[in-house]
Amino acid sequence: MRSVKKEIRIVGFDDSPFIPRTKGRVPVVGVVFRGGDYMDGAFKTEVSIDGMDSTNILIKLLNKSRHKEQLRIIMLKGITFGGFNMVDISKLYEETKLPVIVVNRKKPDLKKIKRALKHFNDFKKRWECVEHAGKIHKMRIEKNKNIYYQFKGLAQSEVEKLIKLTCTRSLLPEPLRIAHLIASALIKGESGGRA
Amino acid sequence: MRSVKKEIRIVGFDDSPFIPRTKGRVPVVGVVFRGGDYMDGAFKTEVSIDGMDSTNILIKLLNKSRHKEQLRIIMLKGITFGGFNMVDISKLYEETKLPVIVVNRKKPDLKKIKRALKHFNDFKKRWECVEHAGKIHKMRIEKNKNIYYQFKGLAQSEVEKLIKLTCTRSLLPEPLRIAHLIASALIKGESGGRA
Picture (tube, rainbow over the protein chains, first blue to last red):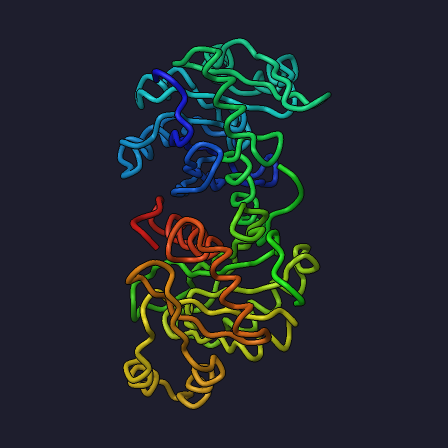
């Protein structure tokens, strides 16, 4: 990515709400945006609750997609989908060749995450995903309003430009705000409060 | 509705693709837009293929919704959902108190529709929905590009203003373009070509 174009195609993924500690699969919605401007496409897939299939599912979904050639960036709302189904953003970047930006509204509490992951037999593999997501950076969007981001495959200055470009309607990049609205409507019948 | 405000809340509904002459239910997606500008919420429900439940399902969905108080207009991509599951826009308007605008990219072929509806035992009830949708009007969006609309509960001049306000990215009003993208992704895994 040389410079940030205003109409750069970004896909943002978020998962649907679900009842914790249940079994089964959870919808994951992807939204393709042109910059922060307007929606150009959508994805829908599913990952297993507390499974470890989300990285591979996203890789396959994107690599076989008709949108792939236009896409330049992946955004994720956090690195966990369907509970503790961890996305390995290093692998996601390597296998799609698309840089990844992870955005959180709250600072992820790594101690708490570590404690929760310790309950899984494959703790080591899951914790690796946390490590692969890299350092957590803070960015001020408005006065007293911060978001937290991690990234892979692009320069930090570009990440911040992309977040600024896409946070046009809220404290979340548009692809993630819209993915959240849709993912929540899929389960609840209509979208709820703020993302 | 006194005048058309730029940020007027509109909900647009479209159904997912399905295999004709099969049984079952089809997803219907609703998208809440502020004017032609940006998305504010989403709905997801289902109607039965070739059933007659779509009018009541939309009425219930809207009347119990947290978005209801803000909503001013309903837009539908055609009056048939899930095959020949007909929406009665008179009833939809009366029971939600929200004016309804139906938009089609092609002029509905009423003769063809009548022929198809004749296969149903309740032909009379289904044909009534076609009649309740009223006269089909043509509107030019761009040079040589027309859309067709019907409406209930507002003045024709307001309908045309609303279509102009919302056709910002294509020949379809934004709430319908986006509802189509999402509805198609729900079944196919990703959105396809143009709405």
